[in-house]
Image 1 (cartoon, rainbow, N blue to C red):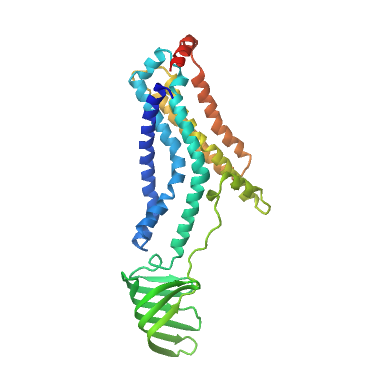
Image 2: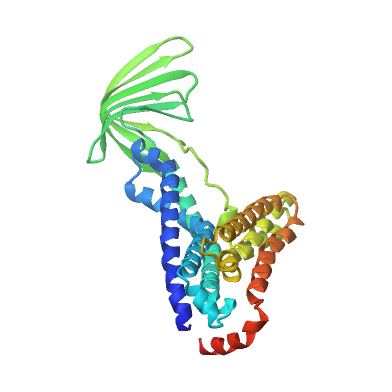
Amino acid sequence: MKKLDVYIAKQIVTGFLLVALSLMSMLWLTQSLRFVEMVTDKGLPVYLFVEMTSLLMPRVFTILSPIALFVAVMFVYNRLLMDSELVVMKAVGISSVVIARAAIAIGLLLAVFNVFVLNVGIPAAESKFRDLEYEVKNSFSKMMLREGAFTSFKNNMTIFIDKFMDDGTVRGILVSDGKNPQEKVVTVAESGMLEYTDIGPKILLKNGTRQVMNKKNGQFSSMTFDDYVVDFGDVSVARKKDKSVRERSISELFEEADKQGVSEKDARAFKAEAHRRILAPWFNLIFALLACTGLLISNFNRRGQGKVITVSILAMIVVQALDMTLANMARKHEWIVGLMYLNCFLPLCITGGLLWKTPSWRKKRSKEINDEF
């Protein structure tokens, strides 16, 4: 890469990293609020909290990277213009294409990286996140049983634990068992220990009382015990979901859409997601060109380039909004896919054509300078 490209590229990369990390940090905080309750109320370990929220970042990065690159490129080229550096470059005959080469190169590099993230990183992260989420929701531990609170399960059982001890035991236990519709069983114990077996979770109770009330005849019985086992049976609160769309690669999405037995609605959804992943990386290059083209082809204005910047921002917003809208519509109407490709490559062709167009009086000098740089 030539000296001029390196000079501009360094500034773009620095700006991109600052903007991308700032936006990702803010989104990480907003996404982490979904899991705060698990940490404060259900005792989710901090390392699991960090891991689960971090697994959401690959998807966030693919959304934010074109926007962050747009901001960085626009800032860098506008600063070069206001410092008259672009004016000097054009005055000596350097073409707009050469000046924009750094932004184009970074856009292409990010596009290639996004291809990897979309088809390898995100499916792996989503699969890992789904497994962790299933494990957290179904783990019979502090994440299900809250200290000092009654916890009810779907099999008509309620348990209260006064305190969790550091050695894994629990103190002050009350178990209300309503699995049998003929009777009501209440068990109270001083201490116990939770165990998870292949047939379900159990709690080993020590030094307590078991009371049974027969609902038919009203007969009441009570007994004390030194050791007693309460079987909770199936207390799972969630079933493991099938492989989601985000967990599949592009080839898997097309294969799934062509399988026999798949509904037309699901097939359209698979194809729409596959085409979206094909197009998404290109927006890094498109947004880089949208950011710099206006500044490079417009005339220098000492009052600033407010109008040019506004038009560029509006163009970026329109392209982004159309991409999101068309991607959702393509799930219902397959012909919308063609419009998705048009929305992607039309701005690319327009910006490329505007950059390539150079005033005739500069062409000869531009060719000489381009050979030097």
